[in-house]
Figure (tube, rainbow, N blue to C red):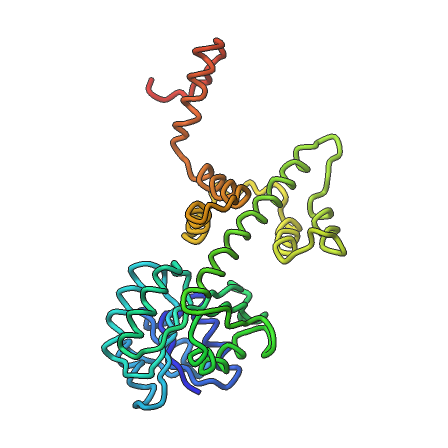
Length: 309
């Protein structure tokens, strides 16, 4: 089997490596020509100089040609899809393995279906560890498209019989990945808050590296996130060189928006997202207002920043 991979960043590049290990031919393109050349030499990927060149190297129809996009969500994926569609023929398949909004995936799938082009949205989890451990793949597609891509999914997953699933129609893959990431936010926030409390209990002088390592074994809270946290704390428990700034991906926001649209309470996921917003607030205007109010009704002192003098 042969497919084209468009976007050879950390995820896309490692997916190429894993596919090549499984004997699947991959034509790869990225705007960074050095990345393309490096993967061609290292993994035996077929290098392409453009998206059109990548498609042409898949061979002529009627065999379904598969183009897998690993691009940022939003305009980059949208624009690439619009440019790509005229290059494809009836029966070809496009896979979006990025973190697109499921509503966009539903719309794009319908748009491609009007042109008799198949579409699969693949919620992809595994990060930089996916090369060695495999990727968890949640895919949305018609049964026919899912069946065609099965050899690829088996190669990318942790094992041929697990770690991947056809979870529903187009849009279902990215929706399940969106909720997956919302849950991830909540789990991370819970671990962070608990460890912060432990660190603050100075009378016990906890060794957080020891505790997190302990919890990894037969504890109810054991998880891969805990494994990664324990590993990080072995070398540095103070984290003085780590800025207290936590970005949020689109999926966390989309999860909370969807909970509002469904009228389903999701307080933990919502608060975890709000805490990320708080970490990004450099101006701290709302906190300044709170200080002003306390001073106004209670005469409490206002701490000066020294600015504006």
